[in-house]
Figure 1 (cartoon, helix red, strand yellow):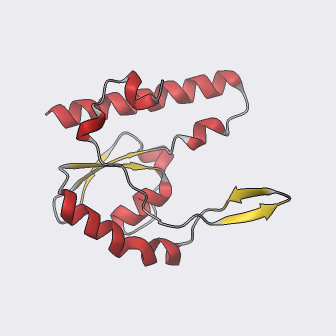
Figure 2: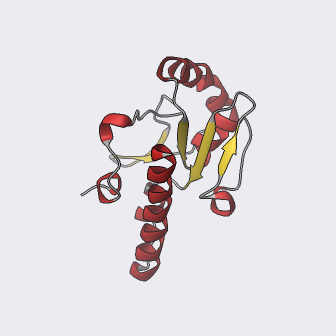
Length: 133
């Protein structure tokens, strides 16, 4: 069961996209290891995200991670400190900040992983309430 299913967010009311439209990676043997996009790469894809926002016209956007937040807000923000916050842009769009779910997968200690997963689910419950109201 996915995180979105666990908190009863209706998938039909959600549009999912990526802030950066390419997969940046470093080859390691036969594997491709994800590499975080830089500010220039984020900015280069911003027009695309803006067009999607113009078409979808959401009343709330959930920024999953630092890259999404930077693209949506135009500047880097401390996700771990601001997670759970709603930032209103100059154009009135509400942006909910939280971690990217892949962050949970990279946590090695099981107890820490479970705690972070629960925090993420709490964030998604906040999103559900914001969507309803």
